[in-house]
Length: 292
Image (cartoon, rainbow, N blue to C red; front, top):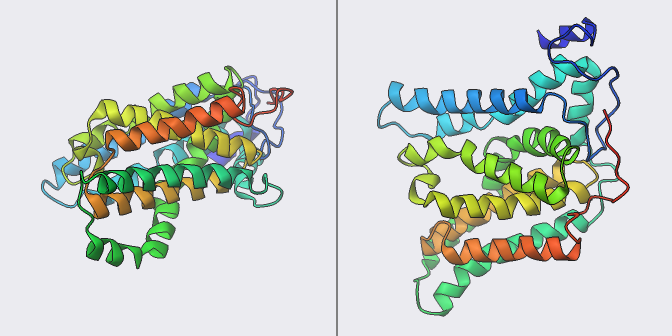
């Protein structure tokens, strides 16, 4: 339905403000057209799903609702792109999944750093005698890691990346510095998860919200670096996001401490390291111009 909007004149369509449709599949800085509508739709889709489900199915497993609601950013990105840029724009959006010439090993170096930080947040309390390691549960969980990773990449977090990084971040970086753009996106990302803190059975329901906000800020900075060094590709961000969720799940199984203060601190340390090393640019070239 929304692809048909491409035939509407840009000057008359209510969401259109760009007269042309450049191929933005490789850009990391885009004019912020439609950004407000994107956030509105993403929140509306996700929050409505997460509000309705526990009321229709009290006491049920919340994961189906969590999974469905998590598609909000992707759905919003597709709708706004179709409305403002038509078929070509949607094609460019999905071409962000292309693996061709997407930054080599640099995006994945940051992924390794953040995984080491999460692993360290589990190992350090065990080493200091502050937590017990459940070896049997960890061995059992490790056997399912490939399946966990694939499921999370497709529907358990990785599916968000086309919206957050593929659509929102380039537009935020088109209006703000890379640091400011990622800080804003990190806060928005944390608030977007807010309904899950009130759904029994979710991982968020066991975490203090202020700690979660700090965790989201750190992870967003890392994912922003991954996206920028991947030259606008979202596959590296999907892989990193899925790997983070898998590692966090393994940590919870091994030591039973979701989003501990040590984890938050180490994640923020990695984010700070990337900021210092890139002088706040997070992999975005200084000559990157706004497109669209």
